[in-house]
Image (cartoon, rainbow over all chains, first blue to last red; front, side, top):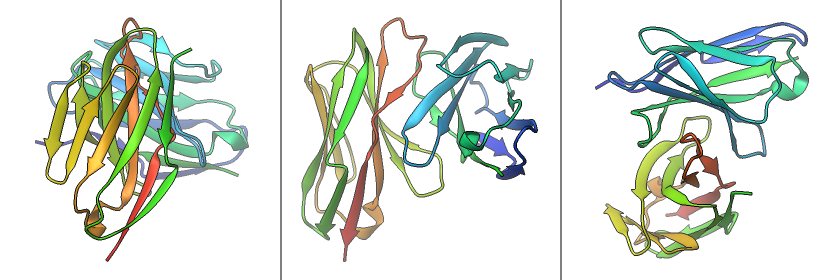
Length: 111
Length: 111
């Protein structure tokens, strides 16, 4: 069974630009979670999508947004990039409420 | 505020030298406690879920236990391939299933 996939693997952007990150969940999983792992910091919860709806978001500004498509894949958009947005962005999927399985992550570098 | 603290921050062991990692937590109501393993630059790999005090789970050389205030990850006769960062996370009741992570324990097992 295929795991969670994320694309791209690496992304380099300039401050002020927009970044789009993509995630495909494990087949059958309806929930997608996004986390940020900045250097030296732990994983911080960003967003939760379930059945196409945003269910909850963490303490991040509105320029972090996303959506979930009918096939349960998800997209994370980060607008007006700042240097401190440089991090590993991790997507996880689950059946709502159960164990979350993580993808390999997208390494975003903002210069 | 829900919080997870892991100790030690880093641990060096000789191959075969057993030890334990600690995860203490403060949460309004525990829905579940999760252990993950993370290799550098990769996404966390799910290891265990524990739901109630007294519960134990084992996988190969790893055993996780749970009390009302903390969890331990016991590593028996570790091998160099067990070297990784071990992450503990909690999920609180009514928290929308988001995971609150500790900062992790970096384990290095020397041959």
